[in-house]
Length: 168
Image (cartoon, rainbow, N blue to C red; front, top):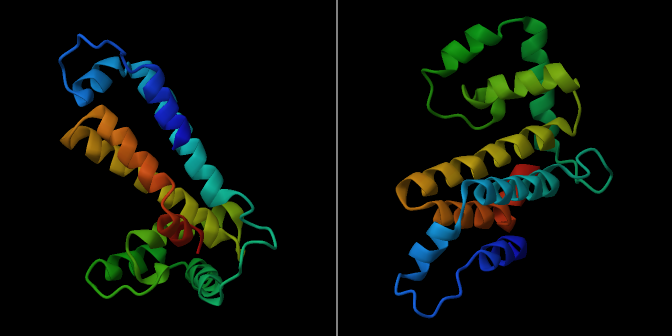
């Protein structure tokens, strides 16, 4: 967040004659290249805070996330992933990854790439958390402005609650 504030301050026009609002001045000063660099910086921060040490002893192993890896491994072993996802599309009470038609394919993909691991839920959560930050950026950018999109993305990126949810 400090990097974002510094970068926006650097391109902020310091002209006392300019009668435009602060938001208009920031929006006009934010070039597409600067926006891309700031967004890439935010995404790098998101990836670091969510994935750093994903398989280390410092990442607390939660039993319920380990059960998710076992459930997904059993689904892969049975070979009924498509049928399971199809049946989940008619259910509305998903309590876990294995009961979600959206998260189950993601979990299967990650488990197929990385293998069954107690750290795989942290990787999946980190990627989903990163996608959420990008989604918030796109939504805020389209509904309000480019500067607002970056600010929202930065705030979601450093949100302690969102970091914890991504890492568990």
